[in-house]
Length: 418
Image 1 (cartoon, rainbow, N blue to C red):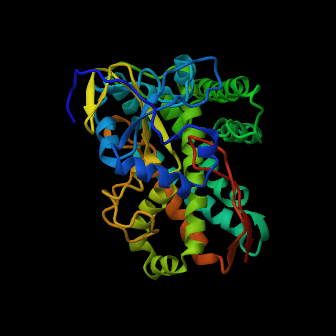
Image 2 (cartoon, rainbow, N blue to C red):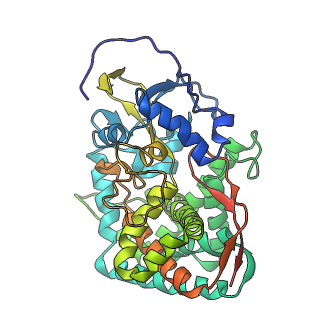
């Protein structure tokens, strides 16, 4: 992986990974194509994804091997986030609202990350952990003997959103609207949530609802400080910098969407895999406390809730023998990296004892490694302890998958639970 200066003609790959037909396929079918890309050059020039906005791009380089994605992630000086991280063409100003400090590079990104991190004091983290534990118990209380339910709405969607609402002190009256806005924001590509004509407007509307909720929460806590995370966020200061109300509003988008949907999808995919692999479930239950740590890593690898992100090359650079020119967009396909045969033994097997497990479910390392990874792991640990020790029967019907190029989502999962 070296800096390059030569120029090469670009031909779109014969493996199309941007069409509606491609993303309408199941994960395993898509991975057959990614496997061919990994086995070939590992990097290919692709047509641009469809866009909700009136923008045109030439295309992007698709990185499909774990090593290449990790390299790009860990070198922000070569692959910047400041021009946006959405693989589908989207105005930079919209992305800045939706992604906050994800669309920054060091040193600016470092300041904001430290600001947010400083609010998670040991006391705040302890309170959040206890809330997670209590909410996990209550969610499974409602599931015991429930009979026929939708597992997504009755279980998977509840814990991460409850955690975020309680962390930030969202009033109970506002919680349904916030939860719906967060769900729709990650689901706009699916016809169930909006028509093609409505999507750009609807996306901005949902973002603004979340932003305004965050702004109001910040203003309230500035006037009425409490013993909570939001008070710590509004009071946080690093190198003379503190967060504005508008920046806290943008942070709420990040938490309510990224912090919610990722754990929600991991829960659903992991529970399906456990039902399909009873021997793995039994292995975990034989020594739950000592095995759940490695199991959670496999939950995240297996589900890969975020399929991809984008970067832009800041200079001419070579990856896998291919020149990428300054200004080119690069797609980081985590879904491919997490099935990379060169990084994982039998990557198509659900293996809770897998160790090491260098998955990229929380990103490829570097400055943008998921800030909420410990929160997600806590939610999964606590929820699966309750699910696996208290439910006596779980049977699933056919999942209803979300159409998305970004989220490995399941909208509904019929279940019969005792």
